[in-house]
Image (cartoon, rainbow, N blue to C red; front, top):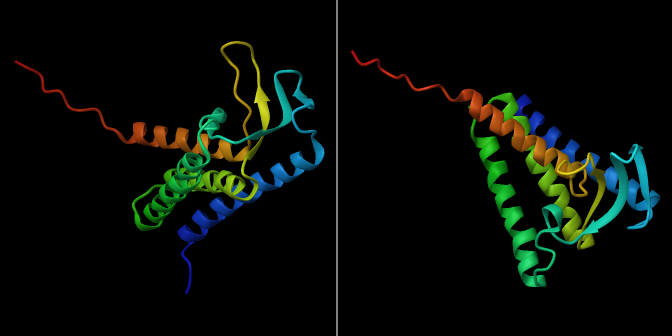
Length: 170
């Protein structure tokens, strides 16, 4: 079975995203002291640390009981990512930017779900603090890919929308 260039692009983006995320997490776990060490990357504005997150984005859901956390943070994302993956392979009309965006979202989502399944938590390590209100939570490479994919999708949708013609009244 010969794969198309399109399929190779999708799979390479997904696998590359997962690999880059997992490599950075392994490095952080091995080289940065959990919770106690904070290394400057760009002064105090952009720092590296090692934080374990049992929830989702910004720790949301970490206070849920185990059953709900498994359903909402592992099972549901796997089902949704599966549907998105199916959609990406089936819809041949998607432009290259949308293909990359969806593939980045899938790769980032799979990488974080992998952590939740294997480690029961997600390793986060980057933090940006440009002063209030320009502060992030602690995040990782997978989060960057998911966020970048979402931003690209918003822009592709906005750029595709054509303004409605307004007929002039006489």
